[in-house]
Image 1: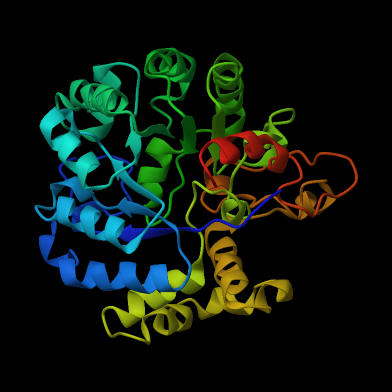
Image 2: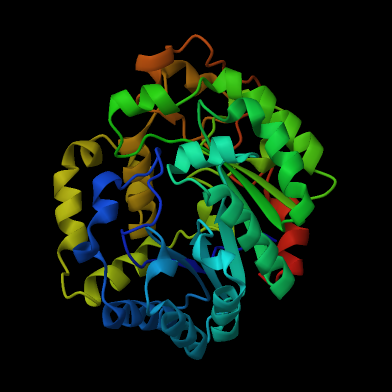
Length: 365
C-alpha cells in the first residue's frame, strides 16, 4: 500500500567544506552569515513534529560542519522523530569518534554523496583532494556503527561512462539504497549546463547496466530527474517530482515546509513573495494543480524547471513524467524524445508502488 512521505528537509546551512562543480548554491556556499541559528532550526523541527512529520533529512551545504550539529540531532531525537538522517559528503564522518558521537546523539540514517569510483573522478568533481578517501572511510564507519546507509551519485557528463564501475565499487559497502541523481541545472547558468548535463540517450544504457548489476544486491535503486521514455523496462526505479510524495526516503510536504520556514523566522510572506516573483509560471500552470497548497507548489516546480514537447502528449507516461530539463532542447534538441505507445497511466506509482513495499516494510515506513 502506497503511503505519503512523512519526511521533511531541514536546511541547516549553505556553507560547505567542498566546492562541488554541480552545486546549486555556488558562491553562497561560502557565506556563513546565511546559515540558520540553532534556535531557529529547533523551532522549525518543533513545528514540523507538531504537524505530523516523522522523519527528517538534515541538509546543507554540509550539516556536519556546524559545531552544534550533535546538539541538533539530540534535540530531534528528544522530539520523537522516527528517522534522523544527514545528507553528507563524509569528510567529518571519516573520523570514527565523530561519527559515533552523532549516532549516540540519535542519528540513525546517513545518505552519502559519492561522485565516482576512483579518487581522480570524485576529487575532481568535489574540487577537494583526498575527499574520495575520506568518504569511503566514512561509509565504513557508518556500516560499523550499524545504522542505515544510503549512497547518492550525481550523474554528470564527466562520470556517466563509469556508472557500472561505480556500482561495482559501492557494492562492497552493502548500501540499503542507491540513488542515481541525474544532474539537473536548477539555478545553474547555461555555460555550466553545457559542461555537466549529458544527453539522456547517452546516459540511459549506463544506468540500465548499473541497475542490472545492483538489482540482486541492493533493495532499492532510484533514478532521479530522468524521462520515462529512455528507461523502458526500468520504470519502477524512476522517482521524479511527481513521485516524491509517495517515497518515504524523499521529503515532499510543502505545507509543513512552508510553516517551518515562515513561522520560525517570522517571515510569513516569504513564500508569497516567491510566488509573485514566479507569477509568469503560475499563470501557465495546469488548472489541476490549484486544488490545494501542496499540489500548487508541485505544479509551480514542474512549470518552472521542466519542459514537455507537444509530442509528449501522445506518450503513455504523459501524466506521470516531469518532462525534460528546460535547458535541454537548446543543448541537444528534441529528436531523441520518443513518446511511448500505450494506454495512458495516471497513477505516478503504477510501476513503483509495489517495488517499494518490501523496502518500506523493512525500515518501518
